[in-house]
Every structure is written in C-alpha cells, then in structure tokens.
Image (cartoon, rainbow, N blue to C red; front, side, top):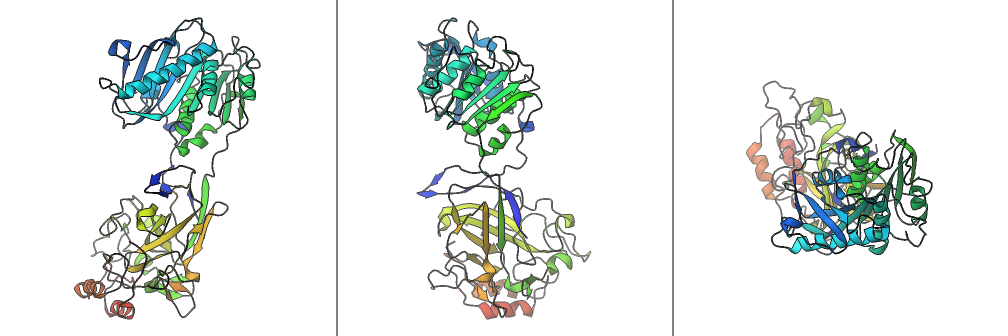
Length: 526
C-alpha cells in the first residue's frame, strides 16, 4: 500500500549548518481562506506622524497590522496618471489586515510618467527601510528588510515593472491594468515575479497595446502571469473586492508565494477562475504530491511473513480513541501516544479519532521522523502514523514536507520497541520516498550496536522490549525496561508499554520478549 501526503517544495532554513526539510500543513489552504478584511486589525501613519518625506513621491500612507507577528513584509503601491493614492487605497487595509505592511503613495507630480513612478516606488521602499530604524515608529524593528514588493495602476503599473527592472532585489510586482508607451524588452528585463491584472474592455490601456505587451516582453525566465477579467475596464483591479473579491484573492496568493515564501499558495495562483477572458502564465509550482512507501515490522506482534497482529485494535478496542471491547475498561484517550516524555511530540494526529477512523488493518501508532544527517539535531520533521498489519506506514494526508534536500534519514520509533534508522540517507526519486526496513538491517553505527532482529523468515523487525524509552544517548533494552513489566504484571485490557506483544495483557509472554532481547543496544542518536 502506498500512503500519500501532500508536499510543497523548496524552502530554505538553516539550523546550525544543516540544510533541512520542514513540516508544513498545506491542507485546507485555498482561495476561499483569503478574507477581506483579513484576520488582523491595522492602523495607519503618514508624514504627520514622522515618516520620511521622500523626494521622488508625494504624500504617503502606511497601513500596518497591529496584532500580527513581525517581522512583516512590505508592499508599495502607486496610482495612475493624474490620480491620487485614494484611487488604489483599498489595497492598504486589505493587505495590512492580512499581515503585509502596505504603503500607498501620491506621485511627486500627478503628471509623472511610468519612469518617474518607478523612482517613486523605489524611494518609498527606502522610506520603509528607514521606518524600521526610526525609534518613534510603530514599525521600529518590525520589518523584514529582505521582503519588499511593488505594485501600481495604469502608469503606476508600468512604473512597477520598471521598478522591478531597476531593483532586482524586489520579491514581487503587481501591475494593475499597466500603461506604458511602446515598452521594449530591455525596459522589462527583470527577474521579479510579476502578476498582471487587466480588463478585457480597458479603453485607457487596451490590453493588446499594454497588458499583453507587458506579458510578452517580460522575460520567459521570469515567473509571470496575465489575468484578464472578462468585461473588465481600466479600474477593475483598483479594489481587491472587485470581481467578487478575486482581485484580492489572486493578488494576495501571488504575494504570499513570492513575497512571503509560502509555497502553499503557489497552486492557488493557478486556480481557474470563471471571470477570465484570457489567462497566460509560465508559472509551474513544485510537485504538490509525494508518495511514500515505507514498511517496518514489530517483533512483538509478528505472526507470519508480512503479517502482524491487530489484537489491540480488532479484538480489544484499546487503541487511542477506541471503545474497549470490555464495557468495564476505561477507553484510551484519543490522539497519538507520543505526546508525553520522552518524546513530547505535540502533533495532533489521531485527535478525535474513534473506532470509525481505524481500519481493520491498523496495528498501532509509530513516530516517524526525518533527518538531514545522522544526528538528532538535524531533524527535519516528525509525524505520528498508524502502522498497518502488512508493515505499511500510513503517513496521514495532513502531513507535508518542504524539501530542499533530495535525500534523508528515516527514523522509526515505537512506544515499546527499539528505535531504528535507515543505514544511509534515502533519496527522493520521482517524487517518491521508498524504504522497506523488513528487507535488511537498519543503522548499527558501523557495527558497534544493533539495528533490527532478523526473524526466522529472513525478515527484519524492530526489537521488542524497550518499555522505558528514556535511554540516552541511544535506545537500549535493559533492566530499566523490565521494571515497568514487574509493576504491571497481571494487568489486563490496558494500552501500556510493558505489553510487549500488544495483546492488551501484561504477563509472562511479555517478559519472555524482554528477556530474549535484554542487553540489546542501538547506536541511533537520540
């Protein structure tokens, strides 16, 4: 059985000197999640509050979130020919309430052409940089100085494109019905991802002379999109609420992907719309689905080749959230069982699970983690996952990874078996991570420790008998693991660690498993 989960790629984060993977849950992320206003409150400041008077633009207003978590990315927006900032001001509250600082500006002269509007945008970015260091500013120390974007309407849209050509450090550009007289490919030669929102019936900047030309002349190596609204006129994108909110939804999705580095929003930019008369793009999102095919066996429940017992599930009803077969037994609380020491894993897998969520094939829960290197400090991500009776690890669909490496070590832990790790990093090939622990021994630390037990069938399985799990610096089966058995010997219908054969009872059969494996020591770093 191949279990699947959604994944979106490539983000970079440095921990020590490692290049890692990171868990991210993209489930439920959709255009419908984008609201106007957004979830945050906002406030405004202007020149009267002490912000810099830039020489290349006129008056300005900064909209900023008041209850979101900094540092914040920022966008500067400039209006069209002869128009004041109020003509595009609706974007300020919308973006600020969605966590992005937004500065709307007037031009130094209302008659400025796109080139001067580009200078105004770049000058306004400098003002935002200075707000980050102005101690009296509410933005003091709260801006991400590596995340700026520009936007503009009409001639301001042309100015946004020219600003991107002048300052390649910008992360994104939005061009609302852009106007520029006879642009050339050199004018628009830049690497900044640009979203062009245009109107089919734009009489001021006809799409065949402006928006389409902008798209065509922007380099094919630059991520770009043309979103033409059917029947739309010149001001169709001036308000994010326009087109039943789609101007804001697609604009914010673009900014969240390219400005905020949130890969969950890349697929949203490509979502089809019923309001478009033309849609052009060269954007391709990273693979949105990786298949996992992972297998492992637990010695304590091994029955036959490729088969384990499901007694805890199908006969005793003792897995977390199930209704016990005996009506005098207290149910095991729902939720994955690794939320306590020594794991202290806070994942919500299994929350609110009942009998209905467990298939007849589930044996128990595992804790699966991924590492960039052998050491625990290189841990990339972790998830709790049901184990099926044929050895398949059922990675749940709400678990995602953001890989920026092409291989990883896989670590498997179980609440009463010896933890194991792949002997080498496993390559992600064709969007698939495949590994079968049952075919060969696992990591042994160059033979200084033990990995798995080879069964009479030739298969390899995790050693049973590690009830204590607090061993350090690795996993061991010792006298401290017998102690929980001694304390609980004779208990029936319980989901507890010293039940090594996982039949719901603690008795001599469990002690036999511990006795056989006593002294086994792993070298997998904890």
